[in-house]
Each structure stands twice: as structure tokens, then as C-alpha cells.
Length: 178
Image (cartoon, rainbow, N blue to C red; front, side):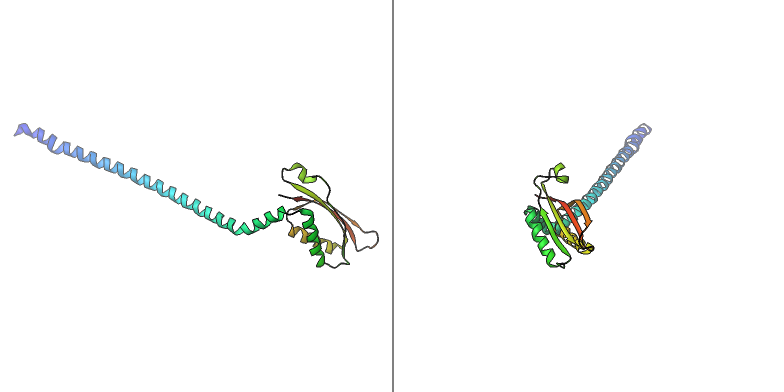
């Protein structure tokens, strides 16, 4: 019996213990790989969800702004001088006629000012008024509110020679167009 004792210990105890330890080690290695893979995928999914939610918020914002964009596109497509004229007519209906008077309206030919250095189409509009300070201010506020594509290029204001309460004002706008 003593002859087989070494073989029994090697093949019956040590070798199965080594195989068992190897299987347990391999199992722990596979488990750690699976846990790290799951953590990586969970992080990737959280990032994806955050990006998707941000995209949905942006899309909702764009959808809320769509009517305004369509209105602005339509407004930019209209002929600028006629739109300015009609807006000034509508604005002057709400202002006291004794306090404001349009003295000149011209559309210089060619592109000048800011529009000359830009690839965007534009035109210039020069308007002159005579009126009180407050009424002129309301007039310009209303015009620039209705037509955000107007960019003030030049503004000159002088006292009127006849009546001290009136001012002569000349403005030049760059009107951006489609």
C-alpha cells in the first residue's frame, strides 16, 4: 500500500485541487471581465440617454421656434423698401402727426456699409424725419422691432432751424435679405 500512497496523493488530492483552483480562478477572471464589461456598457448607455434627451430638448426648442423661423424667412423674402414704407405708414398712424414727419426716403443703389463686406445679400435704406425726440425714438423702436433684419449703419441728429422742439434726424440702415 505504501507504493500507491504517492500516486493517490498526487492524482487523488493535489491534481484535483489544482484543477479546482484553476477552474475557480478562471471563473473569477471571467466574472471580473463580465462586471467590467457591464459597467462600461452601463456608462455608455447613460451617456447615450443623456445625449438622446439633450437632442430631444433641442428638437423641441426648434419645433417651438419653427413658426418664427418661417415668419422671418417670409419677411426676409419680401422687398425691403416696400415693407419699410408700409411699416412706417402703420407706425405713423399711432403717432401724433404734429410731432413727426418723414422728410426723405431713398434707397441708394448698390450695396454699401456692412453689406459690402458680407456674402449675404443686403440693401441700404436712408430715411429722414423731423420730429420731437420722444416721437422719433418711438418711431425707430417700433420700426426696428417689426423689422429685425435692419441694422443701423449711420445716425445723424440735428436741431431743427425753425422750431426748437423739433429735431432733424437721418438714419441709414443695412437691410439684410434672402
